[in-house]
Image (tube, rainbow, N blue to C red; front, side, top):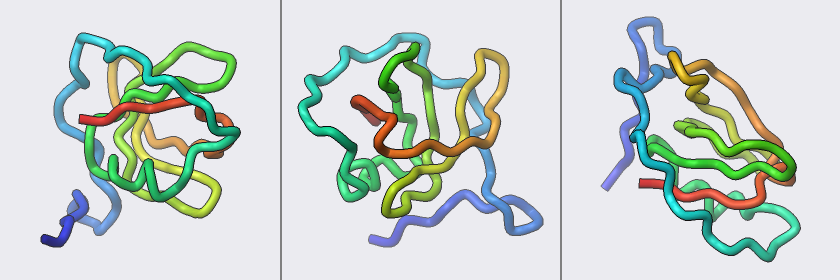
Length: 96
């Protein structure tokens, strides 16, 4: 089954149209120094909660995973905004 990315009218990536869930999932145990790109790629185009190293967690909607980074839309409490992160800065994540 192919994953169809959410492209907008001009071909760019489309942010989710609804806010993320109100409940924050329980943080999984993390033991790696960096998040594996193969692991987080299973969260592409899915609501994902990110726990960064040294900071508060946040909802994220990944649309691209590279060798060392992930990009997508981050919920800022009011709307989705495009952003990217170095995989080494992510302590753990959980997607739905």
